[in-house]
Image 1 (tube, one colour):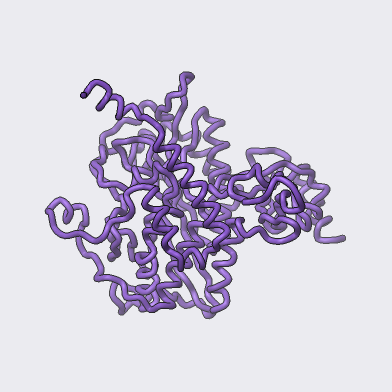
Image 2: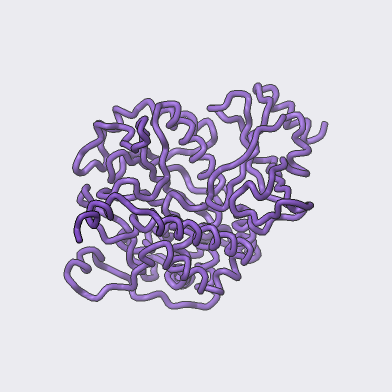
Length: 443
């Protein structure tokens, strides 16, 4: 019996009849289709077919051999979806005309990882998903999913957890069935905001798992009459949602490349150089890690109704310092720039490549920050350089960072920049309620 037939028989014994072939577009949004399990060999070797130009960011034409996008199933990713009876989920890579697609963000990450695999290294990533639970009224207005979630300082609110126990327990049981090793569930700093943490993994598995996490959260939230939102900052006077990356690298012998208990901040020279690479490319990385107009409402110096904001506004790093862009903790690096709206594959690929560039160039990191940067700012003291203030500035930085673009891949960057410039231009043409309230009768 072939491996394909063994897999089909195993899944059919579990009641599976279809495969949800899932990939993501350039925005990091899950896409796909249902196909028969019985044709598994075709989905693995040729791929499930899609009209290429119908997917954001493929760069494929409307006719010819390269107009078809083929999503090739990764056989070892197949597993039953608890919230879709009879269906198995499968991660897929993008191909066109039999060749890997150079705008496929998952393969972008694989190419970046090949650079450290050639050194005998493994990148480990822990991802911290923060999200909001919302509802949309019949008139289209957005509200908190839990109208009673109104504390001035809502962090760790147990009453909200009790009210939303049905959703949270459904998430717990579903994620556990999907192989997630859960670590904690808590109410975050904003009303309506939660965080669900699970165990770290190698970088590609972590990225795949985050896509599956979002797919699950959308389905479970809808089941409970709510909307899962990965919008960076849906509430103006509250903290936004980050997607922090905890990064560490081990060598072929399992030794931690970043860690040195005797070094400053508990980091090795390589760890400091990696952090320096992140800070050196931070402006360009902003475009990929904070990729929406709304992302820069999170990355802003603003008052938080909760009394606390952890927004990483300044390009600095420090020991367990959450006011810095890079936080050194337990011999690893926490990259605090990404938010929940990013394409996690592209953001991780760019982050890794920027850090490796810092190592390869032996960049010196700035003096570690040993103070609360928000208190320093309030005092009027000189500050480290700020991140871009809006998406437009971030896109300019990515366009000008030719070194990072070359490492990441020009084809992907060209598609990304074109789509994001159009997004910015569309935003610039909008007239907001704030503008009307301030200017309509002012002059």
